Length: 113
Length: 113
Image (cartoon, rainbow over the protein chains, first blue to last red):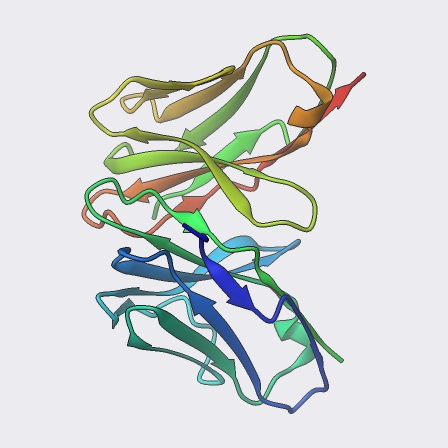
């Protein structure tokens, strides 16, 4: 299997612009997670889906962030408008029952200037 | 609220030594515990997953143990090699929801040739 796929790998944008991050989970996995990693806060769970349905979005920092999963093989994380404090590495991960072992993608490094 | 602590934050040892990385968590009601490796600028690679009913898991030179009652896990690395240099992260899935992972801040390991 190709593993979790994320795009783009790097994104540089100006404050106020819309940013869309993309993720393709491992085929057959029914859970998908979005994380953010910064030096200050470490790894934080933003939101996760089960069978394409959002289950817990309590980690989403504010209304500027939104996530969708229109089908089992694709998810997006959107930031609108972006701010410099959103600069971080965003990871997507997927897992499946019964082990729930999470597999991570390579991440998207976002820089907002 | 579950909290995960990894001590030390950084560790440097000569090649060939056996070493132990520590992870502690505050709530013993967990579903599973996962150890990851992260190389600089890369995603997370799952090393070992221990279910709450298990005491240990082994993969090659790695052995992870779990003591739920004391809220502790250790990752043992035998005969360390320079290629083992990376950040090692511990994460627990809290009881009541097998899906979410709460991460420690990691131990940055350097193996000196």
